[in-house]
Length: 529
Image 1: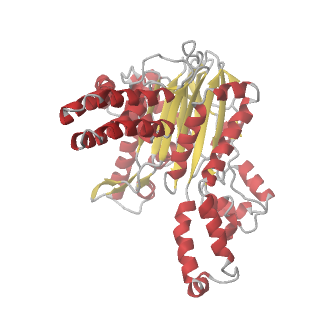
Image 2: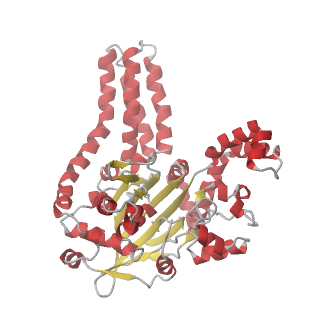
Image 3: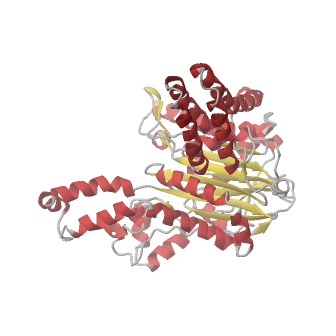
């Protein structure tokens, strides 16, 4: 994943920021094609938001309705209804009213309906007792749909602020942030063609959440690769850690930066522990094959072992980036691995909004990363030429066994004296919030790289994201609920438009090639003022 040197300089010097025009100035005349949006589209979205926000609560209320229908279908089992309806709320407090819980619970309740209607009176209690057991799993391991904009927008409108992170006295269970103060959206990847509609290469591998606890607010995005396994695991594991009431008391006794670092490292350790059997089996099989054999010779002499190794490999693949921002007592902390970004939008002395990148892009274009890799025996020239570390574009990540413990199986990494890929996050120095702070933005690389492809430039990508956000707000969007969704829609449309216009003339033209395929995109925008 490519990133400009300018983005690296922005990270190391927070004072070097780029100015972006105010919404009024942008709407009068913008030079970027990505901001040339149709006003009608942006105006209609705020109108549709109430419908989405109203629809979601209805779905959350659907659980009692489904449980109400059980007596009607069985008619002779009124005693089972209280158990079923009471069991579901017990699991919800783990994420405290988080709408995602109810969205996941619906299929479960609907799954039990046929059982209750078909089963004899004796089997009904089993169905109702089974539900409480399945519910806790969904609360501990929420899926990506839990943090989709529609779900987050239906949270109680408490309007939490970064300057006021505490909830009501006595509460301890974190809740998902609401759409009126925190906008979240994700868009699936696509491959374009002049002969048909765009098609996805794979299911969306991004994950994200925004959580509010007693004394903290946290936002996180994960960009999965080679499958969504690592991103899904990191999402669930970190949510579980953050939902534990004890973590804040532990953090108070230690350095917050070190606590965040431990969270990242523990996430990868637990991820690899789940692969332990596959890792041990791979080593056992490799020990049976002489290391000096070519791949063909190994297959001819040890076909069964080679076949099993090929079957194990997919089980060990996969990794993800992670970018996390946390506000505790009005102080902002940022930790990240990979090239997902955290941006702070603030108002400068001239009254203009500017961006500061708080995260670090961990790629082979990062000079600090190249120095680190050279120190363990790798050639920076070879890394720059390849544009990646082994098979991966990120030099730091969660997962990616092939550049961690299994790096000796990758020819280009044989000279490394230790695993070149690491999960140690970069931790930004703590910053205390002030009145100049306006927005916090988190995004996966699919957002800014799609803009880069459509515009044909890698310059000022962070500013372009801010410019698009401002354009949506200046076009009449007053509620944050659909802001991220609207911005991603514009990026997606502009990318497809650029591809079509260039591909019809020459399918091999640079812009047609650059825009033919785009990655998953996830964007979080949180209002800080």
